[in-house]
Amino acid sequence: MPLDAVRPSPLVEQAADRLRAQITGGHWPIGTRLPGETTLAKELGVGRSTVREALRALAGAGLVQPRHGSGVFVTATEPAEDWPTRLRRAAVTDVYEVRMAVEVHAARLAAHRRTSDDIAAIRAALEDRRTASAADDAAFVDADIALHRAVVAAAHNPVLADLFAEFTPALREGLVTLLSLTGLRDQDANTGDDTHAALVRAVADGDAEAAGAVLCEELEGTLALLRGQTRESRRRYAAGTSPVRHRTE
Image (cartoon, rainbow, N blue to C red):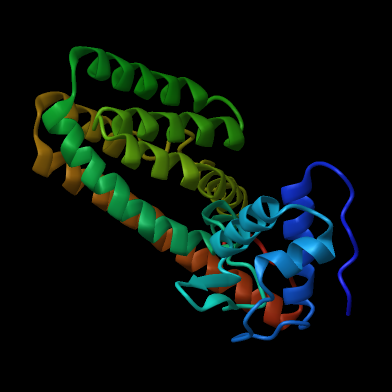
């Protein structure tokens, strides 16, 4: 199947799209050596530098791999999912398990590294969470996540902060769904206030072990609820009594 010449600008994106279509469509199976840059440039109607950049983009997607002195070979027929896409597709319980590893460590670091400004921000976030107890589930979850974000920020590790930010959309959706399905706040609109207050005290006091322990206990409790809801959702779905599969699955 011949390659049609691409239209002007953005040439790299168009060239990459055409090459990707050839690969995902099976024209070049896994293990195939792609035609050389000169040949591809001629068929696509672009310069060799454009082809080179397009191939770099395909390599970044995991579709091809350059081998020094041998050429560029097809290594997959489907592009690798990026991290945000993987998180959107993941079960919230899986995301929560990783969240625990990230956030418990961040809480311990926060107890060592927190500044007076951090402590003030964390305490303010705790008060905001208490105020949000009078609001709906979505607003309460937002305030809860903001408190956890403040603790992570106090660790002063930008990688941990970025990881937590990546988790936030999946966590928010799963937690809002959990509260809606379980009615957890019916009896206590400010559920979990005692453990969150203990977390704030531990970080403010510089007690890393206590901060890690109280957060681990709190997150494990929520994870248990998420797992229980997952099992119930699957049971109801299998029984035909639940027409929708929830994100917590």
